[in-house]
Length: 285
Ligand SMILES: [Zn+2]
Image (cartoon, rainbow, N blue to C red; front, side, top):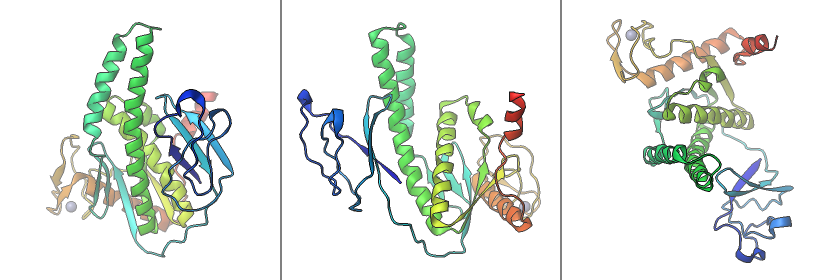
């Protein structure tokens, strides 16, 4: 497991860092940077085997420590959950629970658009352009950090509480066709969500199933199976013509995703996602 520690306050001035480490393992980033104070809320007491220092495109420094932690033991459960990803909400669960996007995100997205506009106006290769680029990267990084935080929390909760988790297998191909900023951010966080869920499910001994995305999860009534007419993205709620059930669009979709996942396991079919492998092999020929 790798833990990331943001180096706050930047590097000590004068290039003569001598701060002591706050980490119980006595770890500090050494070498070219000297020692950097680390603040950790983890009290594992484990000594890291590797310490890596890196800088991202936003100019921020990171220290990553590789630490061996004991295996997790999670309480046995029979609970199952289907998860739907959306643009308006971060996630919707089949039990009706919704997980919203981080609160500050709308404001930060607006800031990102402004920063990108400024960057577009700077002359190529100029110093101001480089400054503007860093600014854009910073806003991007801030949004991604908050998202990662939210996703870390929700994925841990999901694997703790459920034995079977079903998600949609959103093809990579579709992700690349991002048109709006909201879409791009949502796609990026979906990839992250899946990665986190995959390793946590494995860690906790849970079953993760990805169902194909062409499954009509939105339009199918999760109560009686009637298929509704195609509906615009703006339609958040609808009533089934077959059984008169009033549906929240996303909750209904999450329920169908769960049902599809359970059908797959019941048939004993291969539950491994089959994302675009055939088309990719085809391209190489
Ligand atoms: Zn119905």
